[in-house]
Image (cartoon, rainbow, N blue to C red):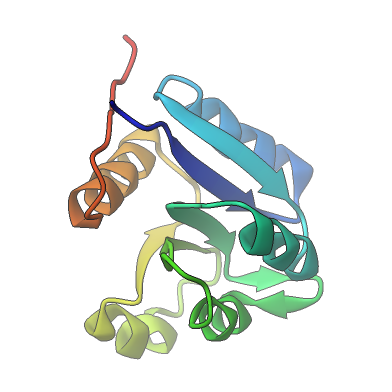
Length: 133
């Protein structure tokens, strides 16, 4: 039996969060969303999330705090950081270690689809992925 993948969107700016959620709507995934790191940690502690899209900076932390917290979760999710600053050197260590993926803002549907595909490919669980036209 195929399992639906669950994705968490962490973005404090409501218009950016809604735009990303709309991009994910055409895929067979469940989407949770929140605006702060503390809300995200609560969701991740109670739900099995396979992929997280996270703004580089949040009102109560950053993607680095999310990476540190994710070490204790069973089935650690794939993390895609949404970069607004363009300071790529800050992300090189995490990129090399394979801990995260970086997507530059503004978001493009193709980048989002590729992040989902890569996360599903890298996951060990059976997945179903379909993009509607």
